[in-house]
Length: 141
Image 1 (cartoon, rainbow, N blue to C red):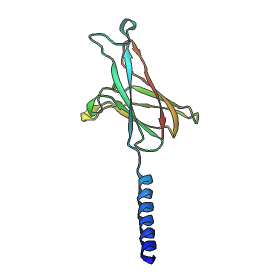
Image 2: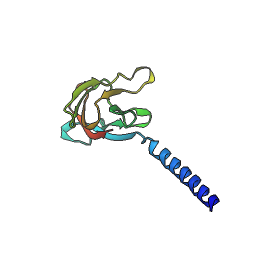
Image 3: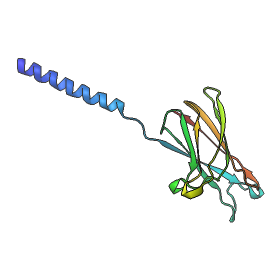
Image 4: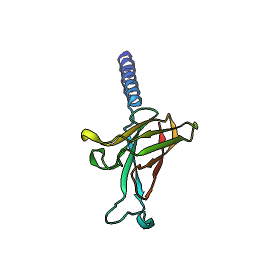
């Protein structure tokens, strides 16, 4: 009987330690795609010479931080040197940043310290032309 009791205690310790390790694992970053619409003649799908511009927000990589970048492979595709504005709907905090210029082979990106909560982001290209700013809303852990 003593052997069975010891075996049961060992099994309990092994299972409990295995369950505690599962709780430590962090979630993988989530990419939220959105687009900036060039608006030639009011067409949100772009035109043959100006297609829609794909951007993405990457959340969950670091707590309270959002990375705005391109939605294409290699994080390309978001307009270079665009103005980015954000509002944390949970805390009321606001801010702005500018996407980098994409020089030396680095894609345009901006790191936003929004804090945790529901966040709205707008991306407004600074170049000329008629463009509808892109926006996205997502939860930041």
